[in-house]
Image (tube, rainbow, N blue to C red; front, side, top):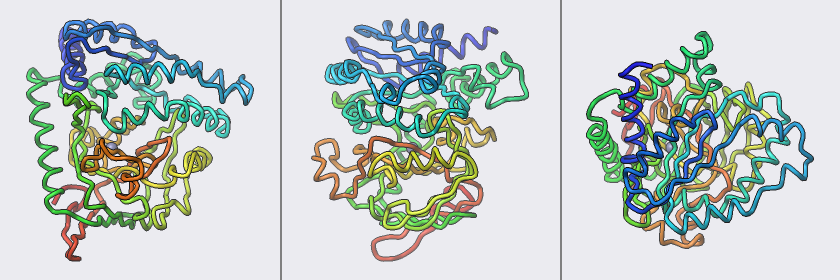
Length: 410
Ligand code: ZN
């Protein structure tokens, strides 16, 4: 690889540690990554110790193992989750660990697996990790999802290229969208986050009580509680340290009133849900709940997703991303939510994010429910933005303002 590549990679590792995680002296770091990422993980590990990390732990996984397990394990076996692991995560969270997830799921990993068995496995791990997920959703500890291109992922994005060329091209896109192909990456990110925060502030000042979405296949209204707020993906953890949990990020987002979603919405990009692609799907909401749905591909997987628990058929996030933005302008479908959700307006099924509630971190589950907070074991984003999307905001006094026209901020 070229000198330029090494330089970009260096900046990317730096961005992860300094901006994404904002790792502090004497903090522990846990890196979860596919085994193929080991060289890059070593790189990040070195950066982390340079930043003063107390200890860097690695949690490598091999996606193929999941497929083998789904083929061969008994049904009881699929439900077994190592509780020492769930407990370990809680213990680390209590000690203010930072968590890096290098995400590169193979979108077609489980295309031949039995969706019912996949659902059993997913549910077991979601259930076991439920308590830990409140540390994530509440922004209590610093966490980050960043990308690492595996062969399987790169090939799904660029099927016409050979393996090496597809990986190289995907790295290029990662460097471009994370601004690590430029010298002043950290400054650029500070400015970018400030821009996103400005958009969030503007929305909060307008105090919309409802948004109305209109696009081909979409006619949806979403209600908000006055105690909820729009924010960018810059959180502050319980130690008051800011971090950016997604690299890249282009969104501002909030949470809806659980029972305040009505109408129909149609996806505009495929959703890779744990190894299966769900394509061209529509959901119909009544008083917040999905009451009808269809999908051209992945219907069973969508059905299982919606049936995970009570809250999985309600929304927990509403995010705005202009169609004219760096990731979107690459015109690439990444088959990876981290990228696709930051190229498109999106909403999420499942667990709401308490970081979007005024003083949400201090509120009890009962208090959170009063502002329309949805609870679920899952949180799954899917993309609904396009150049055809118009969004209107309705204020408390009933007046209507246009917010998005043809996919972009008005
Ligand atoms: Zn989002």
